[in-house]
Length: 283
Image (cartoon, rainbow, N blue to C red; front, side, top):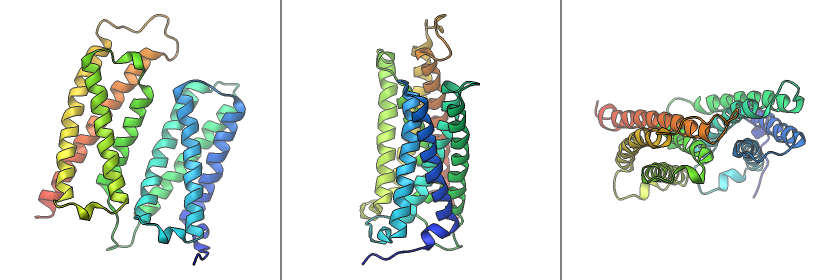
């Protein structure tokens, strides 16, 4: 029997989700009114606002109707992970959209940019509230620091994929880098899905130690990509004089920066996981 839980829309987290739903709807409505653009960055911003709007509204409906209690996965872990992902996505859209698509006389674009920044703050507030659980209450993997790092790793990989172009990785070294980005992304996503589905207990071996091995391998693989990608991308390839405010060459820089950031995240994830599993538990 489906009941109605009014607290889902009257508690602080519920109110924040209502505000986020309205703001994300306003963002993509303003941008759609301003006009379409073929840039993958424009598509990313629109996808971000539509994605956040849809899932925030879905979470509100499921909690209001108490259907969420009947779902076969860790609901609290899912909502915490979504709030983290939504805050990262909105933050990226809030930076990307005004840089590439806003001018001094673009009133709709300026409005969308401002609203997106406010929406980012709302989702960050939701992350903070979902982290403020009573002492002793069990929290899922994605609500922990390693889980949040996994969300950040997949998010940075998405930014890398968005910046890649087919003609950029003709060399075997660059193809290795793309393989690194893809493999690490797939396995990080698999860990997230297994955590949400509460399937970790079915593994015949300690899953946390498997994650440590994955983190270390990913950090090493990203270290090779951090060297190889700029080496083969920029060798005898200076910025073209015809390159405007943003061109394909600049995307190579974006991929390089995101590779460095993700290497740092995987390294921190590895160190923290080793400390938690082998030192903190045995201390």
